[in-house]
Image (cartoon, rainbow, N blue to C red; front, side):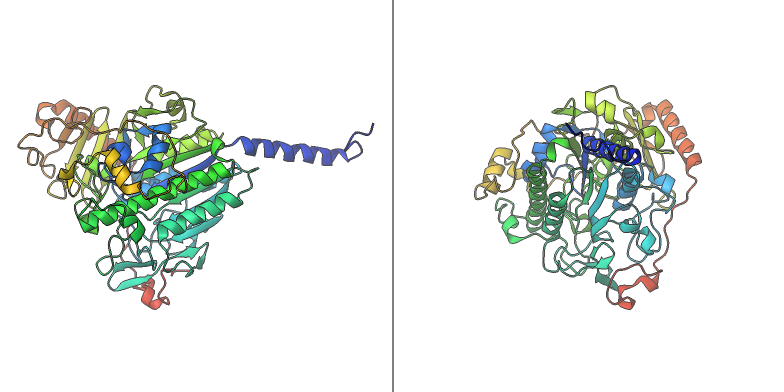
Length: 538
């Protein structure tokens, strides 16, 4: 009998073994699908009890995975995305104040190693579909130069869902859509949520399953479109028709935008299954900040009954919609009340992928993989919501207590019910209304069901709107018993106030990077760049 490869040179045999080992390790590493919804309100998914907007695909993943009930993000797009990519707090990267708007010449610092670069070390193929919003004034700041092999999407924070223009203001207006590093006009006239769904599906379908996949999928939905000149809320007519029960035009269109996002999630999950990749995949779903409710930024999101909106440090601005779902989870189908921060995703997913979180230095994020796998003992006890030296606002949570201080009150600090809350439609009725003419199998809707996770506020005192004047003295809330921030208890718990203020001072001493914000550079105006938003300082 002849043994194959018996006469091959020994060096070549070693090479064969090395290749086989690399393939074996790669197939063990899980695929990671990281989905970011833009400006999704806490009360805009039915697994949080939304009575207006059913999200069956998102719900199925959430109920079959782990719903994060004590999960926090930053109050705005750029800070959260920077934190997600680096595992570092915005005060560590200079992204703690506002967002990168129009032709402001700054971005996530180049000395920061980000998520796709870390996963590259583990042998992952790395693709991005959607919104960047971390700087593009020089090409080195864009996704293709920061670890992604492909990028299909846009650079700025918002834009028109169909013509893909972005309006920083009426004087700064231009086209913003690329494939890799090349301006791409082929998607004009097509709805961005559907474009991104198709692109994600294509990437999965073409993926070589002998290698692990990292797919970063930050959707445009459900952010407002162009303001002040464009349409702030946009959705295909077929989705708007799903919501005849919502009479308010803005809320109806917003619901349609959420529904299109939900369909996209279902389609992507189905493609993973068709490709036999789902059983070895981890799916994370997160919003980037709280919803812009009640007309804030031209939007119609809802965080009710939480207080505040996007761009505030109230719970409605920083308590995020989030879950992790995977057949690889040892323990699942539960609601996690462990404190989790958006910076935790990098070390958590790196560990899940077979890396060592200890190799990731100087992170604010904490490895939560073991905690999530077992519903184990919490490993995080505090979250710095933000310190913004420009806006002079700060907030922190330590244990059960949250402290806010600075120019916070009087600025979108109310409680904003969704339009037509009085309808009180049930989830079952909503599902029947929205989907009675829809072929659910074509949408890839999963079958996991569960009980919605809702917020219970307790009685609202008459002085709830006035008992906190954080611009003069700090305010203190006990979040587990008062998640809606009705009762400022600072005056009766001055020892805790002092302790939390000392914590903020401690964080300030570590804030070595000042805010990176720069004034608008007229040289970046699309009017002088062929009508295109593009890197203008190369």
